[in-house]
Picture 1 (cartoon, rainbow, N blue to C red):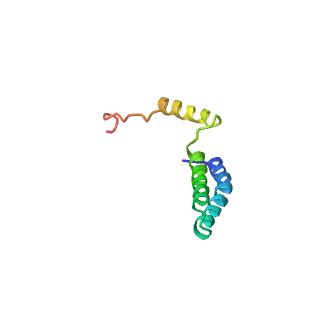
Picture 2: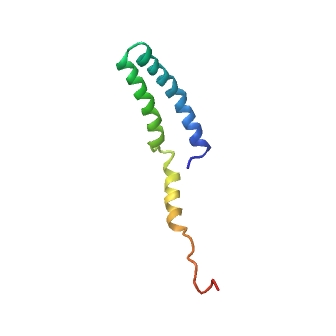
Picture 3: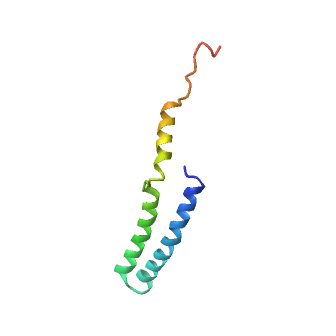
Length: 84
């Protein structure tokens, strides 16, 4: 689940990816340049996928904390005798 920072990062990538995708669609569909148009569309898709999947050095502390606290803090088990 992403926070506000992830949303801002995605918006920044979309600022670059959407013009490339639109130019690719224009070249592919209207001007008949299939190679260049397809390459621009693939580049736009690749930009978004890399942003979503790439782990940067800034992400490492959050991942470590999530893994550490996820293993340390566990839900208490309910005692069947105390339910009475």
